[in-house]
Image 1: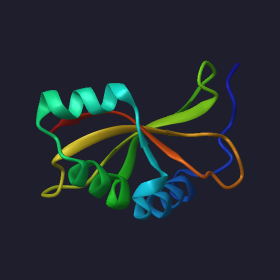
Image 2: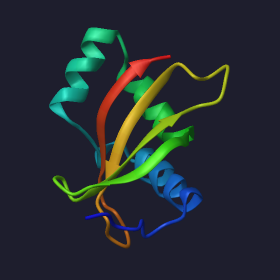
Image 3: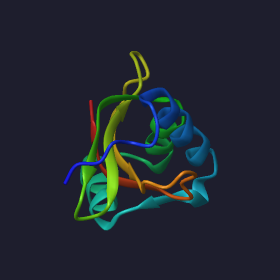
Image 4: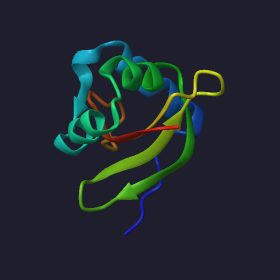
Length: 104
């Protein structure tokens, strides 16, 4: 089953930027933490991408996790990392999930 996002791409980016400004609202999955360690990516780099980046792919509905997933990165020269993140489809999301990350 596919679902339509509750937000436009621009609205979702604004939600993500607002959520990421409060790092307590960003949930790093175990997979993301593992990839960060393997790839030498810092928490600051991930948060910077989430705070300033643009959605470059998605959002796509993940029925298994009941969330919308998307890929974010920043424009050059700040394009250090790419982050896959997700939010639950509620009117005002309370958490932002960092799923995985890699260096560009």
